[in-house]
Image (cartoon, rainbow, N blue to C red; front, top):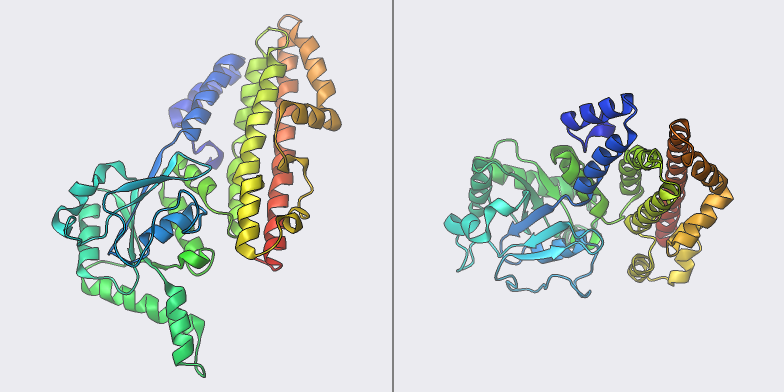
Length: 396
């Protein structure tokens, strides 16, 4: 079942056994382990290619940064990356993008390249070319494949190619025709070098949401292990309604785990413990929702700057109070408004009773946490869609 994709088969069996045996604390402990493993899953992405291919700009774009933002990878017309350099994602630091030196530079010749850049640390490689794929790209791909890792061919700067084609062929210009021509040329060159059934993704770091970025994202989502797939998806810039929907679906699949964890703590007969735990779970998870969907102040300001609009205009699209700072006081207000505060009080009273009281408290805690997370996630995701539409004033 897809909703179990972060937990191993053995974990599932242990959780089910504990649930069926009424050992809620044990089930909650196992679920907490899986949630911590998911949150701490390290994803290391290597970005490589020839000098000047746009590697650093791609690293910045994936991290939601412009080339001149603080913390951005340095870019330039000459090779600026002398050593493999890690760049953590601003809001998901467990996702690390590595800007590797250009293939074929004096210090990094093709035959020793993978050894010099520390091949084993990376989960997969993105091989970037700005004009055409050469023998050095194919040689690198073969070595990566030989060592059991995945690689993806990316043809960058297609926006510049389209602009040049439009100027040359004003009467007969066709964007799709030019893109098809570029893609076919890349495939033919890779086939000529012996790459079987090559897939090439056409991208522009300046317009990351256009061209083949979503196709690349879908491919990675299918091919990465479950916990790393989750980390990659949440770290993606909020480029389109499709990306927002995928994030929402991924986070929906985790709600039952938080609710079961809450239930397990409530079954422990210590009055007040569950209320504290539930509030902490809600503060933590709602804060993650806010940040992942780009509703924090920093993300909104960056979006406003990108589209050239006052940030206050974009904020007008936000309806949920969850776009502000998430605090214990806010969570308690939301619980009271939704009727959850009364349930938590009943849960507290039930937890003071032996056996049956603990079971009742567990059920109330599960329902309250599940409802709050489910309804809040829907609110935040809807606001994120409204913000994106407001920013671009068009269907995305």
